Amino acid sequence: MPVTTLDPRTALIVVDLQKGIVALPGAHPMGDVVAGAVTLLAAFRRHALPVVLVNVTGLAPGRTEHSMSGLRFSPDFADLLPELDPRPQDILVTKRTWGAFTGTDLEARLRAHGVTQVVICGVATSAGVESTARFAHELGFNVTLATDAMTDMSREAHDNSLARIFPRLGESGTVEAIAALLDARG
Image (cartoon, rainbow, N blue to C red):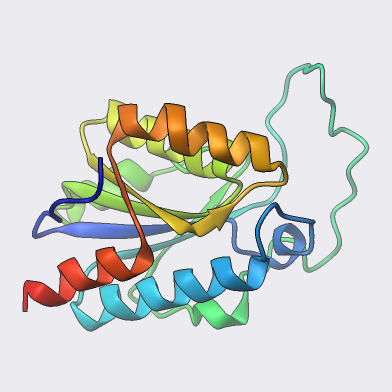
């Protein structure tokens, strides 16, 4: 379902747009994803709405069939992209799992700001973005996914999230449509 409305207290969550992640190959041009996120950041800041910048610094424990235990992180791996232009009022969240809510104080911080809806963008569509959206939905937030401001390492995984998962979690829309809804509110 295309995005129809944004609650008065909607927050933007930007997932894992950091140096080590955007250096990985993506199904869609990473520059386009970053540009879309920057456009959303400008719109949310212009309307004095909460902005959450999320980075990841490690991996969740536990065995998986697709092990990433040999992954080595460069010293600047977790550094947010300078294009995000972090501000003092932004909520910064560092996670060690796929989702931005697990093991962090993100829910409490959003509730303290009176947030009832989140717009989510970033990388990877089927991991960090989808996991964050799932938990936001389970916690009772209205969820909107900025479909042209996200990508995945796999086009199939990205397309699956957009076609099969996201419609069950909330609404989806383009950066342009989301920004227009914000601007229409005045």
